[in-house]
Length: 121
Image (cartoon, rainbow, N blue to C red; front, side, top):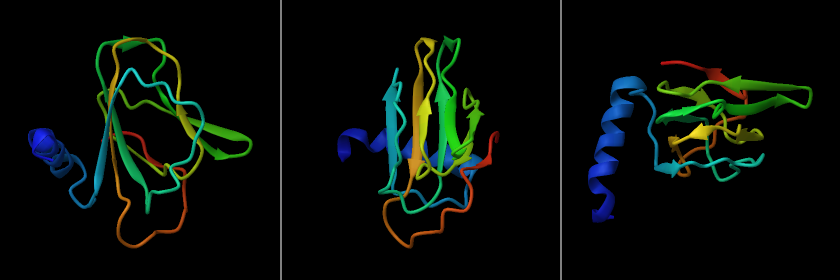
């Protein structure tokens, strides 16, 4: 919508500078969001996540890569490439935390190959 056109443009610039090959259809912008374990089954492929703000003692993105393994991904001031179709959540934290999640819900579906692709850009 026009209300968020400037935010959409800024998000597009961020992705051009960090992961220009990724064609996202949506951006989730959250403030102080602590998610319980969930899967983003509407996603068509992997996603990119970054968190910003003055927070400590947690706030990492936790991704279940197998029933026996959880990968803890530091997204503070860095872009991470993960597959949100795997179970994931945000660990508790203190302070103010914003996150931007770039994902795609249109187009061709890619296979679920890895839970975590890269953890810093």
